[in-house]
Image (cartoon, rainbow, N blue to C red; front, side):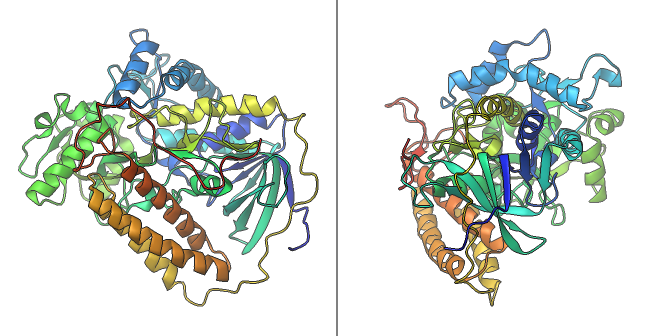
Length: 542
């Protein structure tokens, strides 16, 4: 074992720099030494690209009960009612906190004091507060600016976490606890050790496991994979939300067309201009995302077409440009004037509803380890996430986690001794990176083909066989060569793919985002249940 190293020690280590991670860091930075690790630049996570907004009860005509009811209905019987009620009731305070941080939400008719609220699929009221059609950018850049200026936050950009450090991994017999993490400093090309009293995973989802996704390249399931390897349970990994409407263009790189376009009257059309959603659901374009995504997938496969079309050109041009300026400009750059013509769209993997199991304070199965945001499973989303509840979840649980950590800062000692440095004494530089790139491409393609919007047991079993072979190759490669960003991400994606496949095979019904041709209806013989996966090294000693 290499000698101990002091490297970097903090009170709180936040792995991830999206809305969840930065919210938590800012709430703790006045009373703790906080480090934030970001895989790329600070803002380059999924939060930046969120367009629609944040769902919260902000209008007198709305109610907590209505928001709870809409969330439960979208979740297809698997939402945890206590979690839903907790998040919804803390929603307005989370929005006020963002406003206090300086987030400039859109006002009604661009005039104060009232904020403009939009309506999205699955919502019975207008309750989505937004900053035009770039809400994620407004939130992320505001929080980033405050984090960069706060003396209590140390920022480490271009650092990708490799694995968590726990007492049990170090061979210690005392009660297990997370002590820190190893991370690759991509700029310096070396692995560094970060030690902390509390470690928070805020790494986002895993949609890059699919060939087509609306997510940025950083969404590779790192937090879920690291927590699983450390001994934490994962739940409901089969529920992957496919956003129905991503721009279909070879150079668009998964540009999302927000749910709000349909909320404001956008219609889905076949290539000949025929609307088709009412044939699939009475709510038509305002049906939940899983219904809309399956409808589009069905029409594309049945008719052999490459895409469908989303049309809002019947609205006044001034309205479209004012409400969707980012989409208008981006589509125009690809030759589509959305004030005059429909937008070609396809479904794409968008959101990971399952994740690391946590309580309402973000605590995982291992003491000292927390998970927030898309990498966590809180029970809020059930079998399908209601639109714009994701940023709300990040904000509400970031506050709860900050309170829980803050209450323990003085009571939890730092590591008893310096932790061991990363050991590279028995590895060498990779001679060929083509193995990594080939396996990356193969993994994402068979996940799209076999574990996509519509599944069969035969396809899932084929995918399970393929991922087992890939993991054998990845383990051998990981054991013999120095880590790189692509290797770390591939290792994590392969593990997350395994968890998705195992969960999908375990669910003998169709529910929410999981649709199986072999089990096309919900199981009415048994109560709805979560799919909980338990790693071999669980339970941790308490």
